[in-house]
Amino acid sequence: GFTFHRGFRIASPNNNGAEYIKGTVNEAVVLPPKDKVAGSYHWDFERLLSITLIPLTIASVAKGAHPITDLCFGVILPFHCHIGFDAMITDYCPPHRSPGSNKVLTWGLRGATLIVLYGCYEFNTNDVGMTELKKLTHTIQLHPSYFTQNYQTFLAEKLYADVEGTCTGRYGYIIAVLDSMESLDISKGKVIPSIGLAEFEVKYRAVVFKPFKGEVVDGVVSQVNKLIPSDLKFDASKNPPAYHAEDGSSIEKGYHVRIKIVGTRFDATDIFAIGTIKDDFCGVQLP
Image (tube, rainbow, N blue to C red; front, top):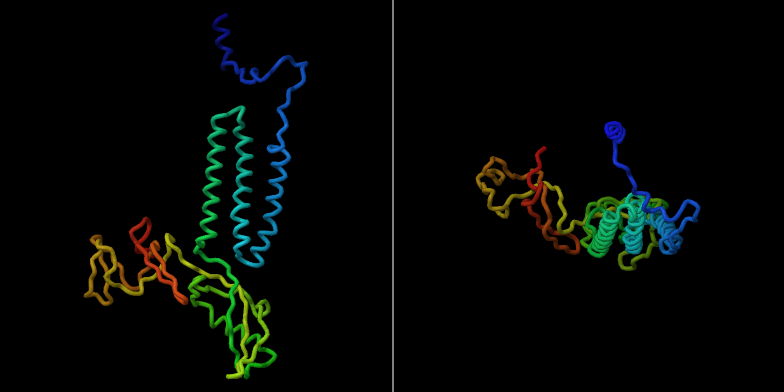
């Protein structure tokens, strides 16, 4: 009898569910108390966040970046993600089954949400520094010889020639103008009495780039001087001058390098930055 019992007992009995059975099977189930915060209020708040994201997304795509939409995104989107991850924790690690894991994951999620909110605050107040969409204004003076039915074409061409590739200082480098001639917001011309030119104010959307401290960027060496780290030896005899390391590598004019920006200075029409190659994955980039 002992051998028969051991042969068919392949696993220990599991009585985890028995401790939750109260009374007999004929008694009514005791439901947990109603909690509107975790019930109807919770779902109404989640629906409100989801619905709010729709017009915010459309407005950002149609009108570009704006401080108000950026602020709303920086608050609503982290809370929306928090609710979704919190539901996953409740489903897969419920408190009655895994109280320890549920508490760790819940507080970890709360901490991560606070970090994301702080990061969004930093982005919105200190500028993200990457490429973004800005609505700018440019004043153009047009000669009377261009006062024809196609004067808007001349204004658009002059706008592209004047602003693309330039630096505004405040917003950074203007990479490209997104508006075509049909979508440009051109004001009515005002004749300047002293010179006879007409002045137009053109509003346009442009992709701008503004570097920031801590950003890692790639560039091309245009000049070699004596401000390279001491572990590289300056060779002034080469034409053009270059730096050489003990392992045989060098930095010369025209080389592609990756640097980390450690400081910036902005003027009205230019941006100055200083960087370092003494960081992870920085230095000369091999082809």
